Length: 219
Image (cartoon, rainbow, N blue to C red; front, side, top):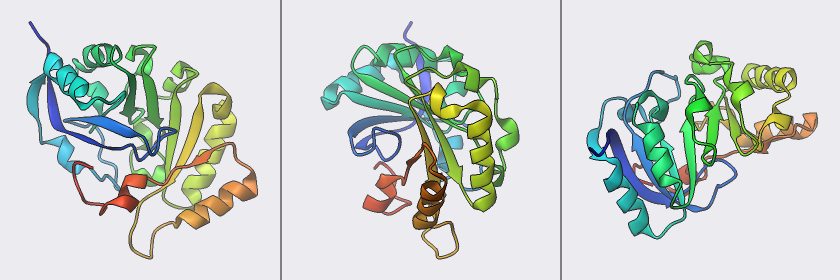
């Protein structure tokens, strides 16, 4: 019997984050999440979803003609069928999984690249982090900090030093919380901190939100 999985939405767009930023990508957004981050931009994924078969999802990936797929959420690893989906997708190209850091990433197939959040204090979800995941990172994996303010930045710097993150994975990403108002952390401000401290990180600006309106779905 073909495994079914709850899917919120499927679309083709430009990858807006990670070291694959700018690449055309087939996105599978799975339904459900175990966290409620204060800056969540896909809250609809917590409750919206319909069952689809893994074979059907694989066929849709093939039909795009693309060689990059991203499984995201919500939180993909809370669904028991996600690992089977990843195993099938990886036979067709490069596969990323975006995960919030609260779930054991050791279940991710070796050829699949984990892009793992480490939730900063201002997210309201840092207590949910599975710190054992840092030991489980593989050389191709990437780690992402979403930064709300100076306190988040200093906290992330401490985590980087304590765990020697830049030596454990392919890339460490820092993103300012996207805020179109004048009140949020500005990309230029975060960039200045990174430059001043000579951090071995990449500034990650969620390219898709600068190309399309931030609330636009399916891009």
